[in-house]
Length: 469
Image (cartoon, rainbow, N blue to C red; front, side, top):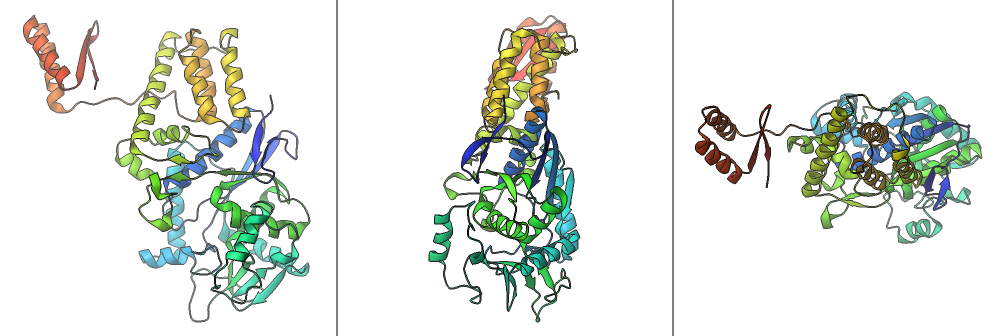
């Protein structure tokens, strides 16, 4: 069974075959570290993590590169406005370098809390300025650039297939619908900055000397230079959010392929938005976005959010609600409880190899992943296996194997419910009444607890309680 992935470039599911047999090179667009990542951002990173885990599940070795955008990402995709890092520095009264360090650390704290595997290589943009300048020089030599008042730009008219990722109609729409440009010197609304000049009237915190003058790299330039430096001129897979298709990834393709004459990436994978009811996608520019810290403040395990993300395929929009996160948290606890029961039944020794009774579930799980990383279906297969009549050791082995892809930490004990002190005191009073053989009082306390949503069961090892609705 071969892994098929939906390729945005061809708009088809294709069998994944890497450039080098058995090795997969992946570039994923990382965070712009001027503010906390929101839950919509993290949904994309979860999908990319499942991709990495699935590739390993199918026997590929994986080299994953992620950039850290710590310079050059302007507040507008139209190459006008301020650098987001400079905006963040002014907002918090810190240096741009301090802002980058703080929010990089905050991002990876959330990233690890969601059980995402760390990339093999991290590329802060500020460490690859030389590679970016070299790429602009290569484009200049081939006649793809022009210089205007505020920077060096890529001339998209020189590339016949410009916009192939987004589609010709979309690119024509950009041209036809363009308003009066902030920079009227651009030859086309689609042309984009490769190198921006520092304004004479301002002192930027992040700027570098270049053959064209002091300034800083364009955001699109960063990813091309770093991806090709770390993975070669043609890479296997490039990932990101759907908002990157029309501009950022389109421009990466243009400058990379113009410079090398080779395909930049063979597969392009994009995750859809997390949406907030009728208000559209979650975005920092809109304000009021939610972060993983909010999830934790409400008492949820961060992996409950990961589970929630598996309620829709990565290529479908997912609507956020706290009710859905709550349901995901309960389901995650139930999964962990089931796995822990299986550990007890199996003598805490998982089967070394799955037996024939569970083989069908293994095949279904593999088929779900092979169909463009269908995590919701894979999760459904896991639930089906746990509810089956297969042996405990077989089910446990399958669950732990599935979790290598799902990344839900199913081997962890389920969250322990807690009682308010006053209800816990009633449980203890009831147990004391039983010891005193005062069964009438014991029954009265049991009824009182049940009315308050606490069911008590007497066992040989003492009373057990659980919360009920």
